[in-house]
Image (cartoon, rainbow, N blue to C red; front, top):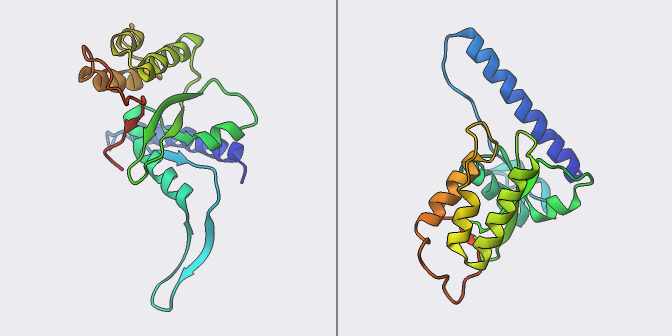
Length: 193
């Protein structure tokens, strides 16, 4: 499949989750908001029937599969339903204002940093995209006070980037007032899968 198809499928899943949640709320029996996380990676992998006589299964294996799984695990933190890797983002045919670079991280189990992109549920405004861009620029330079100013502007409670801004503000709480170490690379090392 082409990455555009994967993004379209992720969007359809997000819409379907909204419809399911609306049906649940209308029933009045249960009060919860069902959410999912989606990680999308583009690369080579092995797909097919694998195993032995004792255990046989149709599965997929490869580094990109592990990366996609780790990205899925990060969605809740970044406040987006879907996170995609750089390979996926660079092969998407149409430029979308709801797909925005959100960080450079080292996922658990990998040493190489990965640039990640959030696929937001709603289209971002030019101002919201600029807030993220300004924050990332200052954070990567090690200018923690400027990064804090860039991300701590007044963001409405309805903004798709609110959760992202809260995460980055929390991340900066330990760094504010300090100088970046000499080996600063602006990459966040994820502690969870």
